[in-house]
Length: 111
Image (cartoon, rainbow, N blue to C red; front, side):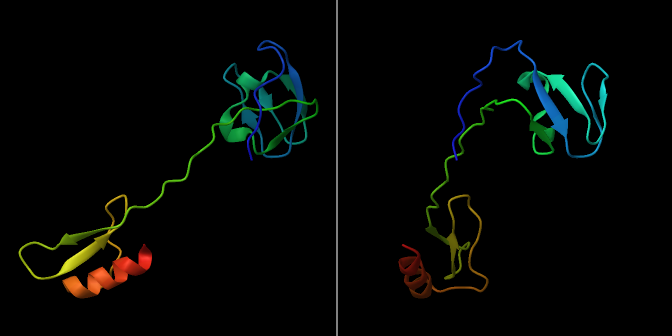
């Protein structure tokens, strides 16, 4: 889900209601559970945006995270005849020692 950018001006305050536990703003204000308060979108810490709800219509911009497609590769384990199957981040996927032929068969199933 992609959200749009903030439609209100940066200094404009929006009414919010707190559905979570109490928290403090940087300026020292405390907001208790169930309290209604006014604050601009930039003043709300990102960690608390899931426990508070806007009472006014406002859109909050969040970055879109692109999924990483894994790239599998074979790597020989030292000077032995065993091989490992590694994912895109370099993490070993196989649990037991694989010969080169076994590793290539498994790798072909991934691709």
